[in-house]
Length: 188
Image (cartoon, rainbow, N blue to C red; front, side, top):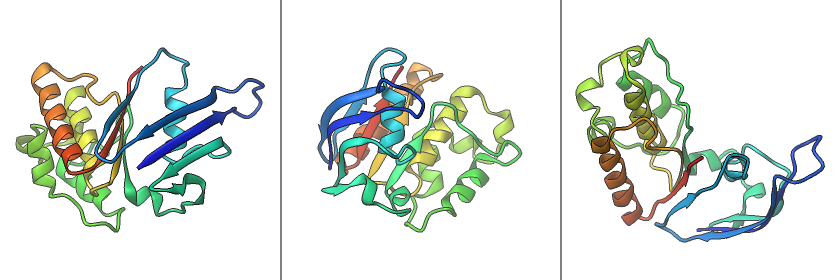
């Protein structure tokens, strides 16, 4: 599914690369995590893999195709949950997900099913401004899976969650992995 070979990246105006010769392979349905201290290049790697940073050296292949050759359609195949979720706070959880669903051409998951899976179904008509950090993180998680992506990138997906909700997130990820989705986790 994903093959990364000799991935190297140097930020503009820097002399030394932040990534140098990174290699790994992720099979279909595998849950893969990048661990390391601050400054190790986890966020840079994620930005390359989701297509935000261009000009890398080495090879990043997704389903046998070089990442740099994908067009805008690549966004249709990936789901991303950044560490700091952003939502329209005057809208409800449901309204936010309806809006984000409209940005994709792909068939989407049922919003109620996603919200129920993460324990937010009863809060779906509540404004996001009233949500706790943990509730926003769970809504962010739903948004990443909304358009049925084949690869999902999660940046600290359990940050701010209690043990009960961490268990719900992990169970959901295991179910999705069994369906063949790749899940990337980035922890700082």
